[in-house]
Length: 179
Image 1 (tube, rainbow, N blue to C red):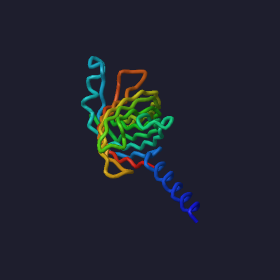
Image 2: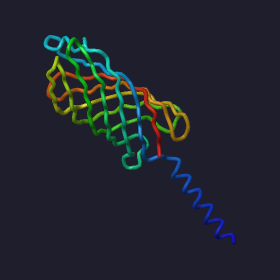
Image 3: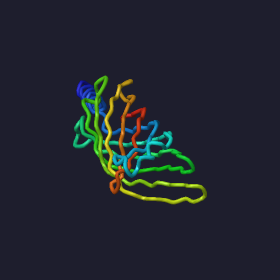
């Protein structure tokens, strides 16, 4: 009778030890985005576009059982940004890496970066056009643990078009769900 109890206890301990270190997460957030350019001589009007509401969804998985290195896939949607009679909106998919201090602690700092693809829609008066481009991105933030499987994330993000000096800066408030 002692052997099954010891085996069951060992199994429960092993299962709970494995559950202590989450391997995957989903991050969903909302925020605001603003167009930006490093070249004010040719793109000075980008800062005149209105700030747009933004949404993001990221899924991530630990790299090689590391608690501090993660692989990510993400989606961003930026709402309509207006300036005069011109309206822009964009959406992007990306892949990259996230490096963080210990995500199990009460608070953690992180940086993330990667590459992706952006689809931008532009409407001026009655004419509209679509543009597809590659981009690279970077972000930095702070997460606060709510409980063992959830955290709140504050992040500043920069998405830069790889072929131009145009970019989108964003600030996000997100919820992480680890599993």
